[in-house]
Length: 405
Image (cartoon, rainbow, N blue to C red; front, side, top):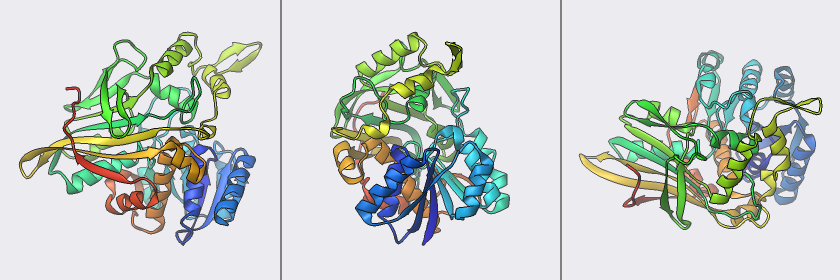
């Protein structure tokens, strides 16, 4: 039905490529590009062996707009599926505008020199994409992505008014390493070390970072994973949800961390290894966090012997027909099953599958419209159906558990 270009050949790019190949009636031509072409070639070989689907591969510097435009003009895809680094969102958006190509990503833009997460830079592209008649879809992974879709589904089908949302992200898996991150270490550590924010009664409230002794955390009993310590964290989807969920009074994001992870990260922060500014080392300029990233396991390599579950979902409190009701929509994803299917761990899988589904929605014309969109602004129903079909089945249950006030 259409040609797509995937930019990024890490753990998520691997999943997106393989899930697109599982849907050849939708994605008739798949092309894959990265700074390191050999990574693309490895994925293409696996796709050929698994599905007998040919993927064309390319080397491209996603920081270089003219180079991106040259590749887009050569390939002429319907859309770009951007699963490169968040630093590269704007250059890829610029290239899509110049080459008249639709755009999608899984995470909001971040400047390299400031660990600051917000959509303002990408929302500023609204008029540019509208004038070109192009669609730019932001944050179509799991969180952001599926969690936003869960919110849109709840707003459409389950509530007249949603008053509170708690997004709960649990990785109860074991990869066997003393310290590793399940997605890009640089992005993950920048995220976890920041001051926490949540939305309440029309304003953003700040609380201490996860590693601070005064951080906000509690124990939540996750389906199939059991009780896990869950820490309040700022996450980008909250910024768009406060704009798009009517009547929302409070939204919070929680993520599980084991004590060994927090202890390692505290030590790394204390000795300066999480710094994102340049330091002098033997006459060279290095960024400590980038150096640390080079030492840590590649998240794409963690799937081997990874056991346990990832459980991600949303707890809603609101009103329907004048009555209060609490509901929990969630997905349980098994690390070992993900590796068996696409040779990836569950965190890559839960990001890559929704990216493929979002692209499917755009290719099929189910989601369309010029401008810049967050996924909760679009109709959730077909996407929710595809989650069940494509490996991320979801459940809705009454919620009778406890959350912090």
